[in-house]
Image (cartoon, rainbow, N blue to C red; front, side):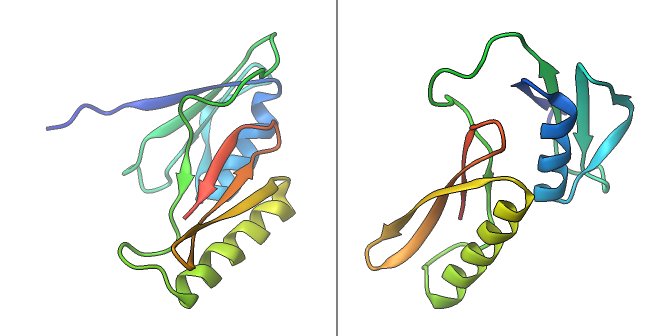
Length: 126
């Protein structure tokens, strides 16, 4: 059996960033772990890893070495339908406070959309 694990994220405003990622991923705030300095989000079905957000004093200064990618297109070849799914999700995330950086092509089809979360952390929608 695999070991359960949690992703830890540094944040300037843990509660705000946790709310963004909860909405982006369909997660919920973990009961008992919602404070200004430490907020955690969990999969409501308890199948996927939790993500904890911890307040740190220093600002983000470089590209993330680890990031979360959101997969809305199915596996395999990219096509117009998968491009529409990615663009629709990216637009919804912009409404939540993300920034769209660019679209990356795989050949002639959309491969993924590069985004920034509200604190400037890179992630992709694929």
